[in-house]
Length: 413
Image (cartoon, rainbow, N blue to C red; front, side):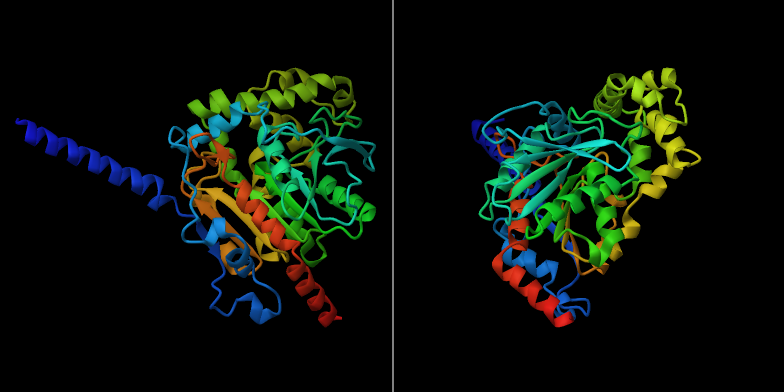
């Protein structure tokens, strides 16, 4: 082969690589918005309130602007598994994006159980300013890297959000003061926390942001309470709407489950158990502590504890009851779900896109690459969703939006 032919072959290979690289990392990475068609009869402006689609179009260029609405993954984190694994190993990382110090508030619940609220900045700063209430995923807490990055990003936005992360019982170094443990079916602590914050700061608009299993509880709360919800808006990141499907995937014998998900989550839950053995042993049901301490999978812990506490036959009946697709049509405040098509825990075929489209209050931002809680973009990885979450929540507390809602409220009286 001549030098000329070699050059042509090399150029063809380079061109092909650039074409497929562009297709994979640019043209295929456009953000897809799932929402009610603004031209249909379900358009919310015809119903007397601002549609979530119009909020996104007007205030969230990172989701809707044709030039900006891309989630291009970090080149070396090109798959959902890599994105997910990278997020898992970043848990304790500290940098300028996450260097915050919380102001902790301990709350005693009606059964003498304790949750902790980690505020940033100080809880009494600007008592009438908006407040974002954040929940981590299963076994997570305010100390995780992606939580701290979100907290700092929201507090540094133009609306000056105060952010409070709710740590569930026994998590985030919260003392366990009653035998009751948090679970994926019970949103009562979240509801009580919102009532407490609203009673303390009655003039402050409240919004919610939650991740993974926390997003499950957020969705459940907003659907159960509908028009009486204390939240002006909610953002659910990687919500496992179909918990039966997610439970099956998590329980599967795979490399990722066996070496990343299961060890991390089980270890975090067993740390709580080991730190609070006597309190857990005092539960009137009496758990098999030996089996619990030897558990290797999340489903084992749920079977030994949550299933017995809530009275289900097995963990699969529990997961089915915890699924939140049934609550989506009852949500009556702007609700944005952010999901990835390559999420190994929440697969795309389990996402309730039709339900999202049917409710004019709900929308989903769907990206091709992001994994579970990853969404890392840029050569130096940074969580892509920080910008759209800040844009969306700042729009919710903008003077124009609040004035619009106030006028609607008066019109209904």
